[in-house]
Length: 88
Image 1 (spheres, one colour):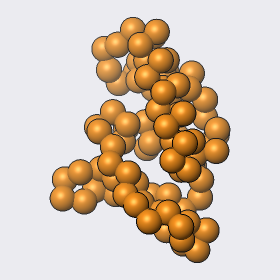
Image 2 (cartoon, helix red, strand yellow):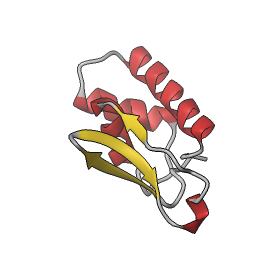
Image 3 (cartoon, one colour):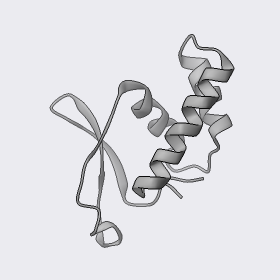
Image 4 (cartoon, helix red, strand yellow):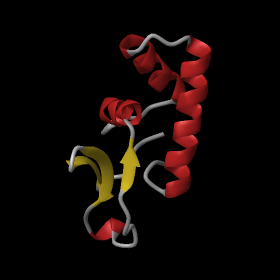
C-alpha cells in the first residue's frame, strides 16, 4: 500500500488535514481531517510502501497500546484511506 502522489498533510487552524494537489487530484475537492494518531501514521508512511502491520509497529513505538488493538486500528485506517482515494 502507498499514499497516492499529490496528497499532503497540512496543519490548518491547528487541525491536521490531508489535501490533494496537482492535476492528478483535480477531482479530490475535499479536506480529510485526521486526529493526532492518524496524522502521526500518515507522517510515518508518507512516501513509502507500507502495510497495516508496519503501521501497527509504529503505533507500538509511540503509544501504550497492545498489538491486537494497534493492528485492528491500522487495518481500519488503511481501508478508510483506500475508500476515500488517498491510498492504493
